[in-house]
Image (cartoon, rainbow, N blue to C red; front, side):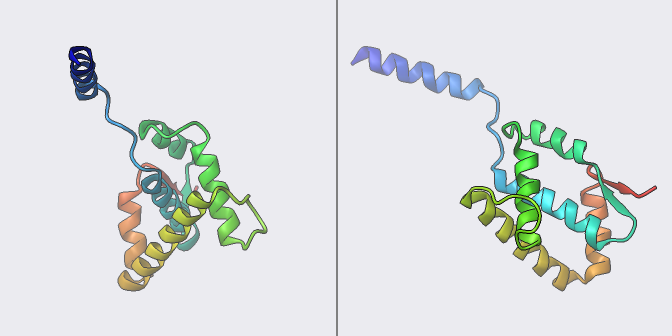
Length: 129
C-alpha cells in the first residue's frame, strides 16, 4: 500500500512539472481552414505552408498533421476531387470548422471577415507578390 501511494505521489509531481500538453487538433484544424479560406475569399492573400507546419510543431501536433488537415480540407471542399479523405474525426473537425467560418462570414460580412482574419492570421498569410 505504501508503494502505491509513493508511486502516485511521484506521478503527480511529474505531471506538475511536465510540459503543457498539446492543444486539441480541432483548434489547429480550424486555424488552417481559416487561413485557406482567407486565401480563397480575400483578394491579394497567400498562405505560407511552412508557417502552418511550424505552428503545428509549436502546438505539439504529431508530424504530418498539417498535410493531413490540408488533404481533408481539399477533399471536403472539392467534393472528393482533390485531397484525400482522412479519418472520420478529422473530417468531422473540418465540417464543424467550415460551418463556423460560414456563420462568421455571414455575420460579419465578407469584407469585415477578411479584415479581421488578416490580423489574426498574420503569421500564416501574406500579401501576394
